[in-house]
Image (tube, rainbow, N blue to C red; front, side, top):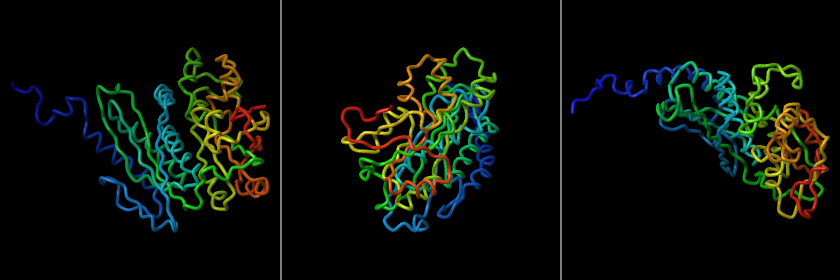
Length: 344
């Protein structure tokens, strides 16, 4: 049977524009260059990203890896036609997990799938990824862009990432050092970060996202919701190198209740005093608008704290000084009687 597709344009007629793909690669080169760091080998466009571990100076290197996406927050970025920060979220979700294990991020790779390759839009996404890498001092060593008509709508795309970090074997943060009496130190979040957005979208489904909101100090709602996830690498590295951290919890999906117990043994619990840190206005607005039970908010959202650290009391002053950013003494580690997290 005679084909109805010309040999030259067959792929384009199937919905895939290879020329646009080449243009994306050219557009993102300048963004990738911003992320270069010592140890990067090869160039963008190879079949694999390479990194020379001997440049790290680590004697007993342990590689720590993390992968994640940004969930349904991406739907808000698409709806708002704002694509330059969602890449920061993607990097943050990966490198914040890595730093929680005591590892310094080394490099990152991204994966972007879309229904229609629009170079200008994909450049914005990768520019955000590059900015996240700069904030984390991680090199963007490669990635993949896939045009998948039929799988995604023309305006749709998804982004995911993969990061690798390195730690001295003796400096890994495993939670084994967390002990009764340790102080829980919370580090402020920048907002909702990248978790709980299926609920966020449901709560605000009938709300004008482009309107200014009095409870948010007249900030436009969509701007607040798309605030990129904070990257904690530079804040935590000095404490890790000084050996001041016993445990770290990255507060992501599952909020306080699921994530904080991940950094200590089953014999211990976290006793947290509400009111010792600033719960951001967006969480109050979510709770009120969605009529969400207050306790459930702690099971879903970060409530204004993106990281929680367990610090020995004798190391607390030094840890606060090295952090060089706002932190809050939110509670302490106690012996477990029933619940793993007690919020008073």
